[in-house]
Length: 157
Image 1: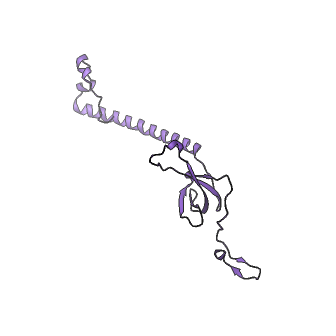
Image 2: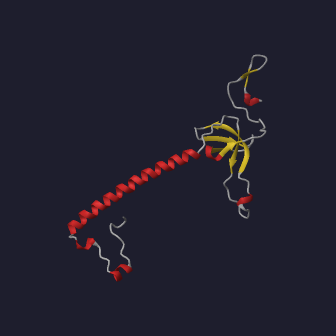
Image 3: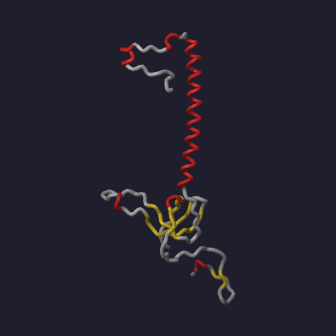
C-alpha cells in the first residue's frame, strides 16, 4: 500500500516468480495501480471508521459519569513515580480533598485544607471519599442574618 507495489524478496529471484505488472504498458499499469490504490484506501478508511466506533463504545463502557457537589470529599489519584520506591508499594490515592467548585461537567476545583493551594482536576482522576471529612469549608453564598437583623458575611466567621 505504501509504494503501490508488492515487495520482491531475494528468494523470488531464485524461484523466478514474475509479476504480471511487468507485462503491462505504462498507461495500463498506471490505470491499474490507481484503481487498486483507490480500493485499498476505501477499505482502510472503512476499517478505521469501524475501529474508532468500537473504541468509543469500549471507552464509554468503562468511563464514569460521577457528579460531585460542592463540599463533597474526594480522593485524588497520585500518578507520580518516586525514585527509589517500588510502584507496587506506593499509595495510589492521596487526600481527602474537598470539592470547592465545579468548573464544568468534567473539571473540578479541589482543595486539601483551608490554607492549601487549590487544584483543577479532571473527573477521571478523583473518586468519592468514604470516611469522616472535617468540615472546614463553607461555601460563600448569600449573607446570613444574625439575631439582631443585621447582615453578616460568612467570610468574617
